[in-house]
Amino acid sequence: MINIKRYIFEKLFHPQVAIINRPGFILSKTSRRYGHHASIKRQIFYFEDIVSKLQIETINIIGQKEASRLWYLIGKDVGYRYLLMGSGKKPPYFLLDQILQYIVTNLNGAGLTFAKEIIFEKNDVFIFKGNNNLVCRQSSLGDNFAGFAAGIISFLLGKNVEAKCYCKCPNNCKIIVDPSHTITYIVDAEKLKPIKNYASLNTPTTNENYDFPAFSKLIAFDKIAIQKEGVFYLDKLVIIPYEIGISGIINQKYDEFGLSKFIGTVTKEISEKTWNQIKIQSNDKKQNLKFLFNTLTALGWGIFRHKFEDDIIELTIKSYPISRFSFNFEIYQLNGFINSALDNKYEIIKIDTNESNKSIKIRFKPLKDSS
Image (cartoon, rainbow, N blue to C red; front, side, top):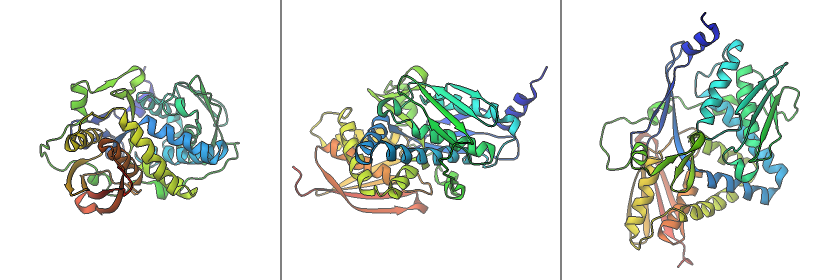
């Protein structure tokens, strides 16, 4: 006998397809038969260490309570946007369990294992259980995933709900979504929607064979390892795929908490230490930067080209990730990566964006007191 719910669900959602063979791009595509065209998400890979250590440093500066609140709000925006990137419309209630299982299966496949099990209770109460979830296994801060759960459930129910986190990472994590919770943060859906030209700005437009590696080549040449539960490793460091709007949400929320300078300084420092763990050891500046920029190209950050003008580095990123949010979080990381690659301290002196040409140009110069 046909399972009607599964039949309807499969008519709505076809399997997700990843496009990883184009330098500078990583795309996921979910095709639809019912009422909407295929949805496209552009993703880039970040190092787990950068996100988790940013959380730890944030706790050190503003305390556990405020850091938990900050990352809960980030998570809720991210969760709501996650579903806005699809149809943008609330699905039928009777498909809720199928859709939730679909979502968490995809997340589990990328190492986000805070929801290995979902318990459906009465009165729209949902319990997510998991363990060893990326990021919070290092920082012990699970509130961003509680926020994420609240965001997706709020979208699916068509009403605001909140969640509470009872996580003792990495051993276990329990998140309860319950309409009776009173945290009360209502997301602004209009400010989270993808821009209208999101797909055209973030998909390759030609078949030009750039002389750069794609993510598929890193896998083919064993530069990327995929371990248990779908966790990706670049060398010895874990990398996580994020939809390109997530970094902008992180940066925006830090701005709202008065932490604009903090996130820039700390992210740069953490990124420098992170790249120190995998950089090549060479006295050739050009080779060091080539390795860095080729790696970031393969991780979906766009096509990198650079040149030196005396001590000035002029970096152009063609087809960089474009969303309604800023690119600042990536720029902070780039600054740290370059500091590491060249064993020097650099500062940004100019940023020019050209959205119509899908490019951003960043100029760096050495700090006067750096050696």
